[in-house]
Length: 346
Image (cartoon, rainbow, N blue to C red):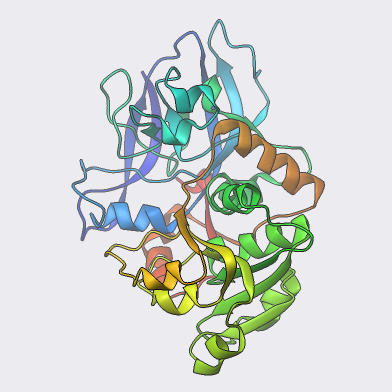
């Protein structure tokens, strides 16, 4: 077993504490990664607080992982010691079902194995990136291009791919009008990526307090959703709306902003159900869809796209002792725009 220092939480109302966890010995196709940085995702908070279902505590969250390969299994061919690599929201899948064979491992018909709060193929609970080391099969590791700093690379493994995948699939690009709902950790990445793809980008945020940032990130327009005139002015405007917020919103109001055949895609995952009036969709042949991260191949494509277009998240690097404070600030929308843990402080 390989010992790793980590930060774990013991229950939905508990604080993070220092601990040590065991990582498995390397199998034939495994790589050992020394984690340098781990991003904090809102999903970490939902899971740590038990909002998405029962959790097997103690829990080490973290699925935005950037680090260096320090050891490889005897049959590893994709990576070598010293490579800069990342691990995202999943660490394995069946590899044999229709979806896996299409490179859509996130939709594995047998269920992918999440980076934390899951059970791996050895029957052991998975623990995430709030730690100093992790062992992952090489097929679920991605290479980080040299011109992306490791601290900035970490949030790309969730926030980056979560927004890139639907923008890519629904054709954000020249001639398309795209609206991004929310300007948080996901939203600010969506603005940067959609702009780089060539779309006309509008931010729809509760207020105008982040307008200057939004325009700097590449938005063409920025509107406050707390102004009722916004929905009147923008009715029927957008080919694609990407909803990044993890809170309950009035879906019908946002559907009214779609063009004929327009689509609204949800990537934010609220802890409570959303409701809609189906007539809001029927009237203009609109669609409502969901999207969850991307496959490993698309995740590598996203990293290469970000490297080529000089896209990186805006981050605040913190120590391991600041995780509880960071969670509170995320819930208060007091972060610009992604917290990243320096794991050397473990």
